[in-house]
Image 1: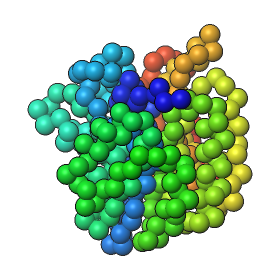
Image 2 (image 1 turned 135 degrees about the horizontal axis):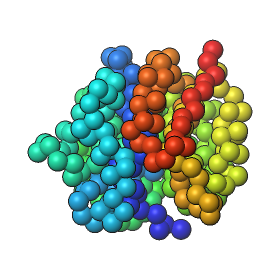
Image 3 (image 1 turned 120 degrees about the horizontal axis):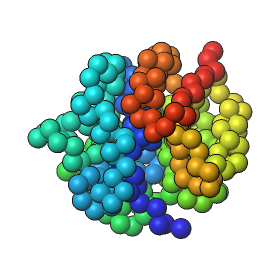
Image 4 (image 1 turned 45 degrees about the horizontal axis):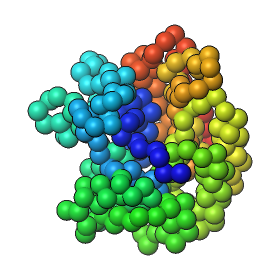
Length: 281
């Protein structure tokens, strides 16, 4: 099935968590002079207009990035993230939200490279258009990002961030994620892998997290943000999470500062909370 369009959810609470963590990971990799790759297995369209089209229909950004837009006294790391989004909205009004590829492009250097994969035909065309001017640094390919990892890893510079955030439209995605990581780690054990997932009332979510924790790695970090009580009917996303393999040592302390603020700012009811755990060498 290829019905999922991320534009409906652009800039929501899950995007805020995902892209904040992504930015922290990219900035850490950029501290060394050596080049690195950014690999995005499910890149989407790359960026989204918030005042028209799909994003305007649900306006999920209003309970996400919009709540941080003019918020005072944010932690410096979170303020830096909001400043990045402001670069795409130079008139000061929140009208555009960058997807993970745009966040990455703003964070990489001349020597770094992006490899973007998207299977949905419409989003793939939009992704190509959005990054046509950056073809020297960005390679956009139509295909299954899970399968692509086999041929890309290890990347030539032996340094990379791999972002895996499938739509979880089909139950098999919850199995494909740990399977892809099992194979990817065989080829690239030192890489940083970041996995996004939705918080839903279905057993596959907790089963996937348990499988990720059993992967043969020395260190991982798991952070989740719940913005509301799960719905009585059992449907709908009430939060999201990120599971990072081989995270930078700085990430846990940053999230200790930022997550309470995200809970406060993005809460939709009194059940809002976060979880932060890690396994470190």
